[in-house]
Length: 542
Ligand code: ADP
Image (cartoon, rainbow, N blue to C red; front, side):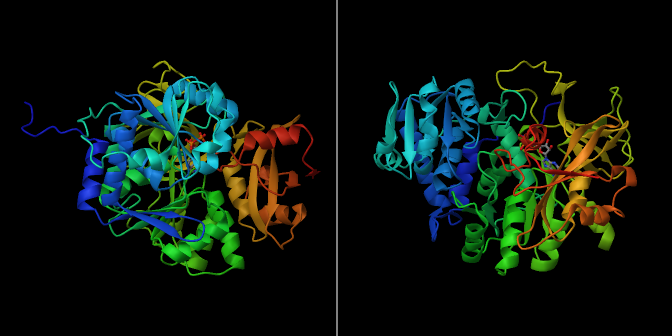
């Protein structure tokens, strides 16, 4: 029997209409370096309509791709709304990709138009001649004359182009299964892979972002989206904000600890999202320049493991709870969130919060062992995490459905290794390529990093496996010492002695100025391994 219910499409157009009418007074606040510029959601509706009219005028039809090469700001938000709502596909280009990867993704997605921020023109200009399908470039927040257009490419001023457009648009009814937006994984190995989110997957994911036991985004929130809009859709904040009416605070290009602290002081957001390295940097800054940040009801940390020391510092010194979450570009990205079960209190609650968290109803998970068998959820058996659900990628764009490295039996292979407790909490021990295999046993680089970062003199620590004749691999710890502090490898080894098993105690140590980071701010262990093998690290051996 079929239901008797209506069957409307879950579309970005609906989110835009809802946000710009029901939540007309909510705001998008963009930091300018010295203050804020503001746009209401009602104005965003008009802004998006003008952009859609402009793109139609430039010949964008059907599901053509429009790239953005932008910081988090009001113009990028208008692109997030307008491009999918008009039926085209938003492609958020990662401004920190290596040049050849940037060219690869623009060509692979066949971007027709690129919206670029004025400050990023020099970065795009070098690669533009190699982007074969681009016909128009629109320069926002800057002077289009700074861009020398290659043959066949027209350059436009965003403001001028939009000033000529009507502020209404006849938004089409878009099939919820069609692509709305795409994002390429940062491609630590091989070419980047494109994930094409559907209107439906974004809609369902946005509801999850707003759920009470998830990120809890609410109308009363003012959310500071530090995680870039080119990194896994800013973890779903822009669309969830339209859905629920939360105001957004966008830091634009001001991502260093000092300007972030200024944004906090000026705008007093209630919520924020960023990778651990941003919070580590902010913590050091705040420790030297104290400021009240208790207006933050909670901040979400993911993208790599949140060190427990960081979680304790924010909560105990600043009264701000850190919510640990796990996800990836292929999972939209929300996969799991670490809110302790209702019965857990005190130390036990903290132990739950250190994990990567519980899966929501829409994400199924399983652990697969070395020989392909499914592992029990007993918080001991370790395996590769596989996930399934309506906002999880089933394949890569333009790639084969059959990609046994990443997809099999309708499951996404995450490449993450860990264990799951009987009550469904995931603890990741590593990425499969970062696991340290020592004498037939596995050493978790994440556990060691968290333990070393628990030392008060340590700002950051990254652990990699280095070749060892006897044990295959042994851990090497690269330590960044906090400004004005001192610590030796001998002291750190002593500090670890009662925290990790004796056979896991690292015997290779190096002190560095900064851990190399990937394009999305994670520890770049590939580069650290290269630095070790080419001899550029000064290593102490025990
Ligand atoms: P990339 O694969 O280029 O790093 P993603 O941003 O999609 O791009 O990264 C997803 C990966 O980040 C996950 O597969 C996982 O390894 C790691 N990750 C994300 N969140 C966490 C977390 N809370 N703890 C540990 N690792 C995490």
